[in-house]
Image (cartoon, rainbow, N blue to C red; front, side, top):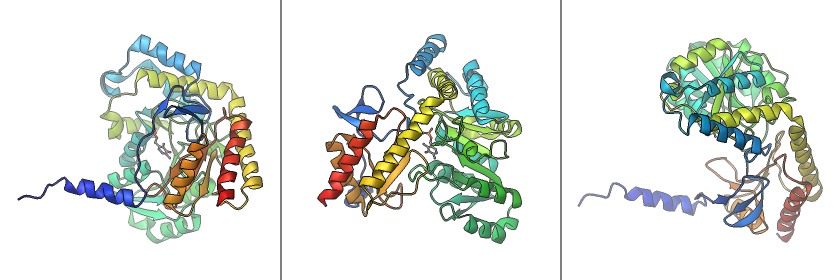
Length: 391
Ligand SMILES: *Cc1c(COP(=O)(O)O)cnc(C)c1O
């Protein structure tokens, strides 16, 4: 009798379970915010990418609702056929103005922006140098491009330089690719040094500002602004799904590059345009970011409060180095991380365990929001403190 060709799937799932790598969804009801209803229970939310608390903001809701009333729910086609609306233009202008670039292009997600941009920029004769901790979308974009990929150790500029000296001349084009805020660690890429190497070795540089947009820099423009590198030649990718509280990805760069992507990025050309509601919400969010710097200030005050309390009450725990609202407590194993995550949940705190294969070492990942209150942060520290005390 023939072997069941699908039988391996069950075995594979069993292996995932044995390694404590199994994942499943958890349902949240009601508004997104600093506290949420998780499986029917109110918990303090340290698991959200909505850093400025905009996903439930009435102005975004009003903008999205008005866009649906004016344009309907679907954009009905790709941007180059029937899907383009004035809203897309306005959003692209707003992103370019926030980023201080000549132009910008919005994609249906950040993931698609990375896949489409990388595959448009490099191919078989080219080289990609990638930080080993890059986001999945950068890794898969690199693979899909067909370029030769060399990973360099996390944020290691010396290692990157010696790879460039060793192999750069063997390739036509070269693209250096990195997260700007590392999404599962919270640290920053060494941007000024990367820009210098890119210039010296004639490489393009692509940075993924997913967790930096609306969060870093004086005006919320991102890590590029934070490092004083605004106006330098590079390619910035980002998302509207995190601090901007909506959905969709973007590329911000010079006008020539954006024009080229409109002609060559297959994940932009062959997919349906971003929905009117998502575009309108993201546009409203950029206006809020630009008009209400106090949200940004509050976010960083909350980060400072949490870091201070951690040092005071959890001095023996391994906090990964972070310069963002993402703070990670390293734990010895996936099982340990799951236990702490479960304990926190039972204490009314939502801060998930992040495990391999997403990251090399297991951890509890905490993201701070501008809308967290001091009492929320104190409760988190108390709960973590009592867990580690018990051990
Ligand atoms: C979340 C994230 C993305 C994907 O963005 P989406 O808009 O959610 O698809 C890309 N890169 C990084 C670094 C991210 O954290």
